[in-house]
Each structure stands twice: as C-alpha cells, then as structure tokens.
Image 1 (cartoon, rainbow, N blue to C red):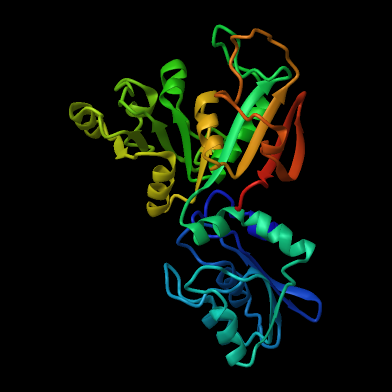
Image 2: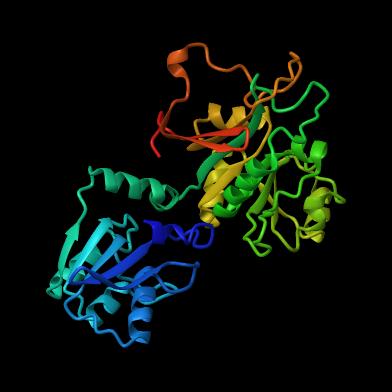
Length: 360
C-alpha cells in the first residue's frame, strides 16, 4: 500500500498500484505505477529485477490490484508475470474494470500460477478499497469522485460579514489543501468565488514547482467569467472549463473560446458529472461557497469531505457558512461519515471523512 501511494496525483484516471516480488522471505524487487501512461507496478518491479539480473523463477508477487490482461498504454502485466516464471501471485483487490474483472487471475491460473486473493471482508481489503476509492468509483460509475473542501472558524464561518476570508487557516493547512488539489483531476468553484477572489485554483506545493495542476471548472450559468481574470489569462497553460446553461450569450462563448477557455452547456450538476466522466475526469475538488456546497449536498453527489477548522471566532449572523440553503429538517437526514480521520496542522484541525449515507 505504501508503494502504491507513491503514485498519488500522477496516475489518474488509473488506479494506485504497488507490487513486491519475494523469494524465501526476501524482497528481490518492487515497483509502483508512477505516472499515467508509464509502466504499471508489476512491470516496474520486473524492470528492477531485470536490471539487476535477478531470476524471478518460483518467486511470489504481492500486488495491491489484480494484474491487467489487456493492451492499453502498456502491454498486459499478466504476460510479464508469466514470462518471468512467477510461481504465486497474491492479489489485494479484484479489478472491476470490465477489461479485467477476474480475467487477469483466470489467465494466470490457466498458466499454472497459484493465485490467492485477499478476503474481501478483511480489514486490509477495506484499507485497499479506501486507498483506491477514486478509481473504484470512477470505473464502476463512469462519474468522478466528488470531494468537498472548506475552511471555517470555530463558530462555523468561512469569512467575516464583510467577506474577508484570507486567511482562515495557517500556512501548513493551506499546503495540505494544495497536496489535495494535486491528487485530484479537477477543481470546481462557482462564479461568485471567482468574482469575489479572482483565484488561480492551481497547485502550489513548496519544493514541487512542477506539481500537477487540476483542470479548473467554474459554474457560470450566464458566462460572467471576466476575460481579465487569472483563470482566463492562464487558460492556455492550465485548462479552464466554464459551465453554462442554454441561455448563455453566443458572443460570450465565442470570446471565452478565443481566450482558450472551454465551455460546456449542462442542464444540472448530474449532467455535469456525466460529462466530466466522459472526458476521463475521475475526481473533482469542490472549493465553492455555501451555495455551491449546498447544491452538491442536496443532490447527494458528495463522496468525501475535508473540513479545516481554525481556532478563531468571528461572529456575525451575516457571515457566510460552509453550507447554506434551507438545510435539512430532521437530524436523522444529516450527512454522516465513515473512515473519519483527524489531522493537526499547527493550531488548525482537519476533519476528513467519506460520506456513508450513499453508495460510493
């Protein structure tokens, strides 16, 4: 699992996969899927053993996900396992991809290779599903995994009554947000956030100047996105998509296209997620205000939440909160979470969990 995690933020929409080759209790090779389009974990492990002239005959390979058996950007990993005369393969999770879905294991067994699959109800299998929750959701639904993130004060405010929000949390917490941006394929906000803050919505990680940037998506029904905004001025460097309704001005569409901005006409958030999935966007970080957050929650589209809490009190009944709208009437209908985690960043606290009131 630790090896697999090394590919975070680089392999989307592929899964995170790690592989270890063991003989007589000694690790003789290991690898992970490092970047989309590059070698898969199994072939990276074999690349190491080949470079060291290590014979893998009779060894056991442990791999977090079922080896692929189809040609994509890379040839099938099953072929490499067979060619290197591996005797036993221990698989963490079956791959639900229809192109694999048990066929990889079947091919290996037909070649006389012993294959053991982890018990799906074991704690380790649960950890592996959590690690690859984005891939598992995307490959089975063809829709992106939706992550909602916000920062608030102890009294639940995301800004003061005047709109001042910089900065609620400290530098360490903000760096954690940028690592989260790197791990996901897209980032989304509403036009209100753009008009108020003129954000870049890019990834800025200390020591990683080349960290991957997510595709930037703006919910902008009437295409009010300013042509001189940071998003538009950098649209040819980092993709920007403005999502509008059918009544948007053709002249505004043309102006944004000339500036390098893509425009999508979507009738609903559900329609938008389907379009994103069709464009191979496997995950999206919602960094909107209370109205956008409420829209996603009311539509029951949120899969995961990152809530940063700063030890500050600002007060004010007009100060905005992370989720606005009408809210729920009964507590039994509240969104609840599984796999809840707590992290500390200086004085700030991160509460992070997967939504458990809907299928992932």
